[in-house]
Image (cartoon, rainbow, N blue to C red; front, side):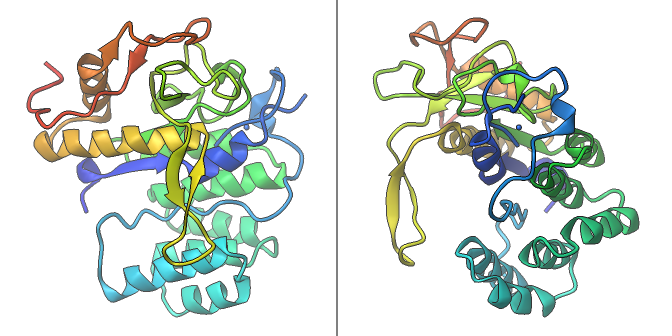
Length: 286
């Protein structure tokens, strides 16, 4: 899959990191910090894994999705065995995470050294660094965007009801940062971050999402990590009709097509802009 055909939604990481709302970060703690780049203290549990497999349906992709599901469900040993059967970069990233915390950061650092131009390594290295409370997470995320500048990133604004500019990676200027609304077209003020670093809002409250209770399970969830996949999906539609668009053009299109002036309680500095999904995005960036 070419970079221009990819849209990455940093959601699992954003949600978990968002649950961390700035300590005193892909993002969510309490109270701004003057040095967000240092990251928080060590987070409990295992860090969220992001594999960019796109629409692949080959044998390896199916196996890696199963292994990632095992990892999310806490079946680490099973996930390690499945990831270890394959030698692709995605599989090696997955294996490093499934071995958490044993040598995870060291393995990812070695992978980053061997494959300095692979964004999936830098993206997950940033998450592992953040989860470990180590410096360098923002640098890794910036490097991921620099490695594949034609890949659009949609990130959660964070769930701390605070300024998104205090949260990473929402504060980065080369991503689409998404705030969350309720079904009454109001920012969900119980959690959604806000501010000038937010680019757009999308529904994020009472969203039907996958559950780990069964293969067909679902649950109603709240969060900016529920909102950002809506924007990632719309961005994919934009690229489907405009395959040569850069991430900046994708963002411009979504802003131009979005619904303005209809939201309430957007928060100081936030745009009053709600995502609108269209069947016709052809030439939408102007």
